[in-house]
Length: 169
Image (cartoon, rainbow, N blue to C red):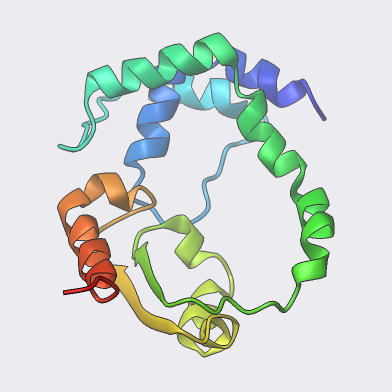
């Protein structure tokens, strides 16, 4: 219901939310008790120290929190609210194969990699059928959803090596 989630987020400690979202290492789906909501969740952990990894600073957290405090969460929430509409609008391309060379990189701690059926699709042939020019699947160990930040040098090297194959000498 539009408005309810925004209200809950508006009561939360936004900086703490970003710390939790960006530093999460548990690939299982996040659980937010309905009776607490996101605002209650941040209150549960407000006395805990959340150590930031080397790729994330307090300045980063403060910037994200300031931006979302100013604009709210409606834009991000609308992405999920439009899930069914996105499927409907993209229906004409169902079954369309991606015909360009692809290198796919994912972190082994990325919760999207652990959604039901995803690993089987990626490694069991479904992905290759949809992407026949799939050249490589890289599963980076110890990396979660924000792999381009967590292991930026390694990700850049993968992309650079992939693109080098298509350049003229």
